[in-house]
Image (cartoon, rainbow, N blue to C red; front, side, top):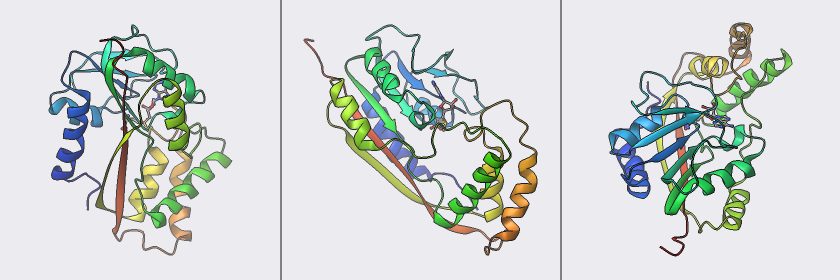
Length: 242
Ligand SMILES: C[S@@+](CC[C@H](N)C(=O)[O-])C[C@H]1O[C@@H](n2cnc3c(N)ncnc32)[C@H](O)[C@@H]1O
């Protein structure tokens, strides 16, 4: 059973992002999280500066400079980075328009913004179990890390970036099969640091997971094959007078 991206798909996706971001002196990964995606870029030659409001880096994170800060007030000089990677961050940020303005401010002329709003990590059956865990957590008073579980629409993001002088995006989508048991999907929803705001006692969710599994018609320990989808939008800043 695996939830990992196959190596050939990773080469296709992250190789393309590397080609867009380039191997210049500084590509900013905004909202780096665990650093797992950053590592894919670093392994393919991208020189990164990592940034997040909270340090969630795990052992897989690349050995790159880390800045603590918000995408709404980037501690970076204007026009100083050759590329920005912004993956699955905007739905955490109430003032997402401000975040986009900041990203465009720090990009050098001709630089690339590789942005994903999230794609789909779990198929419908498993998503329902996870939603049941989210809802029960909210009833228990736990705070979600997401500003909204619905990513802001891609059209709204395109329009905002067009207004900031960025070109029409190129779309890069990959999909691949993954296998998870209902138990794994529900248990992940109960502990994942991207889902719950930091500093909370999540232990009440252990019982929630058991209840959700008992109430589900799905056999809890039987792997289900589903499709994971990752969608990037690649925008390029105008070259200006250069
Ligand atoms: C779903 S995770 C995505 C992590 C990584 N980019 C990836 O795709 O795997 C969202 C990340 O955005 C970060 N984040 C939330 N609000 C932020 C803000 N205002 N500025 C920068 N990062 C923020 C969170 O701390 C978290 O690490």
